View 1 (tube, chains in turn orange, cyan):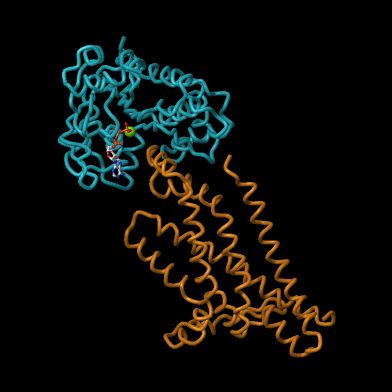
View 2 (tube, rainbow over the protein chains, first blue to last red):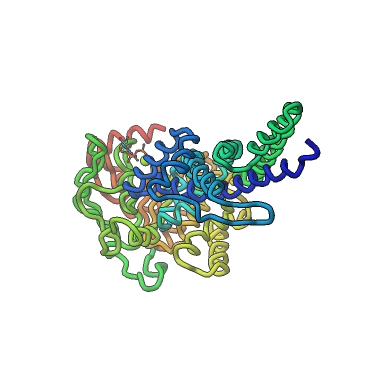
Length: 224
Length: 261
Ligand SMILES: Nc1ncnc2c1ncn2[C@@H]1O[C@H](COP(=O)(O)OP(=O)(O)OP(=O)(O)O)[C@@H](O)[C@H]1O
Ligand SMILES: [Mg+2]
């Protein structure tokens, strides 16, 4: 195992990269979705509701399969993605994983944020409207700042689940941590258990870091 | 002992007596429940109107229709001669001109007292921050909570929070102030400090529509008492007449009940 540390770190490098870009994208899309779901425009509301219930209820693997095999048939593919940073190659396998995971995780982020929005008393939005704030101002100045605090725990859970879900990309040709682990266990089958443990610890460390960030945000943003 | 509006209203709006808030033929239903029935009400500039009536008679609903926190099914409502906008920017602008004070204060929990008062002026009126803060501090001092400016709402007593809520509404320089049972969530010893602020406001010539059962306030500050029951305005008169010689049985009955306590 020690001889193959570079493969270990390279695998987790992909995992971490994938996690970070998906976190940003699924947060952005999740915020958009929740704004649509609680907003005043009926069409957008139903659109977001349908999106969330369809995507959330589809197994992640199916979504990956869709972007790998079905989407290219209807002309959606990521072959044009060719980014190389140091020894990392970000190609269509990475882009597909990014799109599938972000679209999937955004639903959970949306639902987490929505539970936060529901935790903000009606009177807060009413008072904000009463001083003349338009819908956008009511949301950005009053409702969302409080909702985001209340939704740190559920959103963190969604992101932690996503971090572990990055391993699904291993099946779809991305050389992230789980794929690296599979390679190593094949090459050194006598040391299988040690290799498993190392990779498990790798995931645990990453998840713990995310939990700790979430805890500290929760503490810092506690509503007075 | 009522106000002398000429002396106190803001320059430019000094046309006391002219109608400022007008409701004509207003009807509203919640499903089968006819909460507002044929409401006709005109409130003049600088006038203080107290709305009184049994629970469920539609007082809050009436109050909330005036800044369109509730929509109406029929009839029209005008403020300063203009019909209420339906939605969007125009509606937001209308609401900025109508101050509202809620029973449960509804101060923004994540903002300091000062930020609660400056939010509207900065975001809606586009007042420069320094100017908005100076004005907010002035208003907080006026309602007696100037020392608390840096605190969060949860650190204040109910009476203090409600006075901040009044300052927050005043910071928008509203044409009219709506109060929906501003003291009924307060402990007795805090009621007076809020009522004092409201009486002061009335004396400065603010146009006010106040849902309250505080007879002391009605007697000192109100020009008119409107009595509601079952979604209708049953009786309207000056406070003294209303409390001593109510015309309707409903009002007599209601006063009998609240006076016993
Ligand atoms: N959102 C709503 N949906 C359905 N019915 C409602 C709603 N809001 C109020 N009502 C009903 O409308 C009637 C009038 O309510 P409103 O709050 O205006 O009364 P009120 O005179 O302010 O009473 P209170 O003194 O208890 O505050 C009540 O019977 C109430 O149950
Ligand atoms: Mg009420």
